[in-house]
Amino acid sequence: MATTIRLTRMGRKKRPFYRLVVLDNRKRRDGAYLANLGYYNPFSEPAAVELHTDEIIDWMSKGATVSETAKSLLRAEGVLYKYSLVRQGLDAAAVNAKMTEWMSSAEGRKQSAADAASARRQAERDERDRREAEAKAKAAEAAAAAAAAAEAGESAEGDAAAEDGES
Image (cartoon, rainbow, N blue to C red):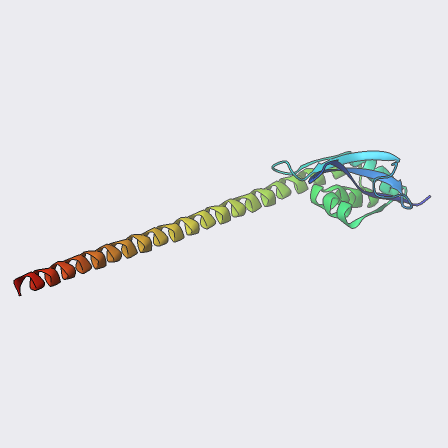
């Protein structure tokens, strides 16, 4: 039987929650699965991912294929890297050492990405505030010009009335 590791959709309408499962590749997306290998919740901040790494590696070593979406999730969490280390024949201590090194560098990448996202959001807020201030200044300038024009119009009417009264 050909097996595939892929995501199955759970959750309610417009609030998806996914399980990473192993199932026969002839089954439908939400069909009965052989094993539950973890979950992925994209709506939590940050996205929650919980994977059973050893089970995933076991299924992959048995020949299970991985869907593209599941592969990107496994790559981001380091499972594919760990699987490649296991396939190289490294002992458990060497695999753990390399995974610890990878995790520390991955944390640095995640932190720098979070910092960049934070800076980008702050720049967007600053730009929005600047545009709002400019719009308020233009509106105040237009209101002052309208008031000056109205006052000039009143004084012109008053002058015309005064001239009419003098004649």
